[in-house]
Length: 447
Image (cartoon, rainbow, N blue to C red; front, side, top):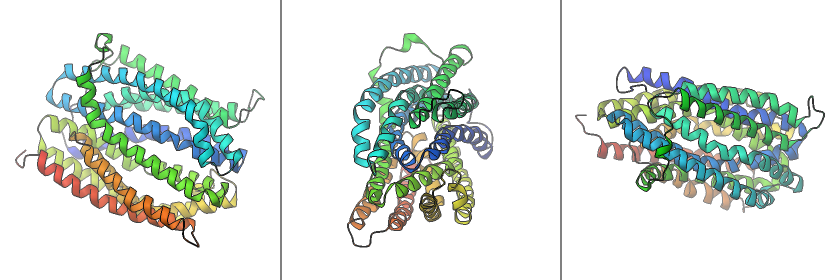
């Protein structure tokens, strides 16, 4: 256990954010490795995997319900020096992870085909996306256990073991991807199905290794099978914090689905270009997201210890660091977007769409970083409803305008990107305003 209530806040944020960023980079490399090899299979395969990747947002939404609740409650318990409650929360999160994994498998196999039939630009795109999902679904189900264990460690201020495990799994995925996708060594290429299988096998390996770490090495929170009997009160506590955060990711799924749906008439090139650009943007966001992920345990432990002055200081430094990093990345995406996209696509049409997308949406990078920081603070304070309300504002400021514009004569792709920039800026304003109100309510001025 790492005590985050002592020492300079800025140093603690950097200490936590660096390995978190490395771990998140490893996680993102799953998708980038797949995109690299799938991109060599043609536009239909690339568009299919890109469209199918949006389904991961549903799983991410559910994992966030579990992960955010686990981080917040364990961090607050650590701040109170309540090891018994931290262990109860961790073991109950494992039980919930098992149930969510089963639900993911059942729902995934039942609805992946119809989902791709709706969003795919053509039959080939839909078939590629469905094949990918069928082989990746077990890996998505296993993400719940990975998130539960990683979140428990993060709540106690420990992040390096998760980073190491993620690094190993990404390396394994990188080795398996060309073997299964392109048929290297075996001579039996599986195509997009191989991309899904490679990720599933790598994630399974990571779950086993991390579980063994908890059984053998972790001391503060550990696997206690006598705490696996469902405790409804603990579930309610986890869900009270986690459900709004999960709702945020579901809203992201809706927004992404709206984009894919509105641009499908522009063809597979447009969907593939947007898919590559969106994945690259997720990678670009990693530094800011890592800072936000560090905010939750640092501010959470200090909130549990009633060190309210340090809670405020955590947000100040997080906002400064995040805005600085995102400003630099904005410049990069304005100068060399084509260079970034061309690493994952050969088709000029795909590169053009992806480059234009990155160049335009980079205007909202700083605003996105502030939104992430506010989200981390809401988690630390144990009230994630305002964060959901902030994300929900995009239904009014993005989804409705895009659906309206898509019906107008002369509709162009750039219109979607422009509306996205404006709506994200408005969301940042809403998030900052809501955070100010919550901090005024929950933090003593003399804390």
